Image (cartoon, rainbow, N blue to C red; front, top):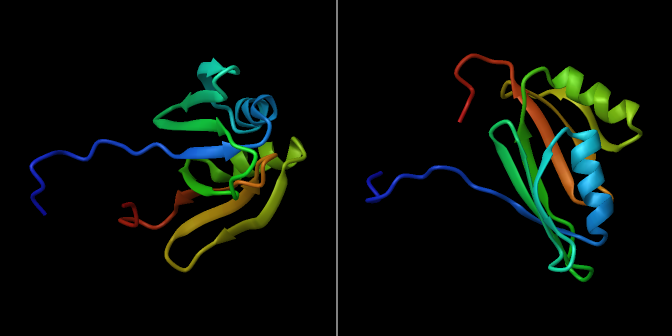
Length: 123
């Protein structure tokens, strides 16, 4: 579909109740780097590989979700499990070719993490 512009990427903004705890989770459990953090503004920008997300302090917001595509999903799963992360959906090969699991951050945001296993299944 011609739009007159090119879609480049999309970054989720996740509401978090405790910015420091959220930064630690995404840095230490999922391996993101901290690109920018401003505790006074209640904001942190996290980057890792081609993935990017923003953490925004918001105690009143309902939890959200995002999907993180990775390579070596079993390694990502093991890292989360070893860190004691709350895994809400166990590592599963879905009928459409994704092998994935879901982990919950300290603010109850659900992050699905998966890898395309079937040829041609990528978006």
